[in-house]
Length: 326
Ligand code: C2E
Ligand code: CA
Ligand code: CA
Image (cartoon, rainbow, N blue to C red):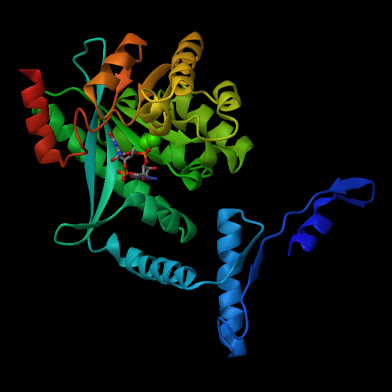
């Protein structure tokens, strides 16, 4: 398999164009994995899909792949009806603004309860919803919940701004900005009450379309926040290309800040750089007071993490705000 990869690594010259291709190989071993040809082919297919997903050169079939595929299939079939059965809920995690403000900031995070007390984590089902074209329905559900909850907060005299996570497919949808505009007008919400969180990976899918969609949304008054900042390959160029007004430093940097000197320097430089570009900075995954103090010292604008609060359902969020206001 290595030989095949090496042979295909060099570009092909076709009509004076240098074309590079990538290849993902899946394998299964006969008779170790199976002796029945149709099943062997299914195993090879599962291994090839896993190699594609993990961007590995090749993967040989093993039983774990089977349980991954089984899980994928199970979630896919359940997802179809989850929206209709109203199985989703939106929780909110506070973002603490360091300079005092009367506006509360929260990130909306979807929850899928499949049994009493048993949740399927969003980072497991969101990618599957994206593949099955169900993500737009999910985004719309979260948006509608946010509108209802903004009203509940307003009735409790809480001025709030809510962050929503957008998926790659939302950013490729030309109608998304029109849909969003209609929704906020119907619910008497102002654009600055919604912050749209996008990841670099989502934006990279089709940079030209994403850029156009985000520019339109930014002109409409929505604030765009670059999520998981620092985990991709070209976070810095994203800052220059897209109308970004905020970066969220990924928790992998934030959490290692106290242990590794290099990470401290990276976070310090990122905060400085973002401020130079007129962007505010959120640090994700703040779990201890020491970390919070360090980030405040570095002039980070917002802190988010379990040290302050876990994501909460709307009822508990109201109690949180009432306690925080006292
Ligand atoms: P994210 O956008 O980076 O969200 C932050 C994740 O970190 C959340 O996980 C949150 O619960 C968790 N978190 C917050 N503070 C801490 C902390 O101090 N320590 C640790 N260990 N974790 C912390 P969650 O809710 O499981 O969401 C995972 C990912 O799923 C999100 O990552 C986001 O990419 C995606 N997601 C969640 N809700 C939605 C949604 O409504 N739509 C879309 N498209 N994606 C969503
Ligand atoms: Ca986020
Ligand atoms: Ca994040």
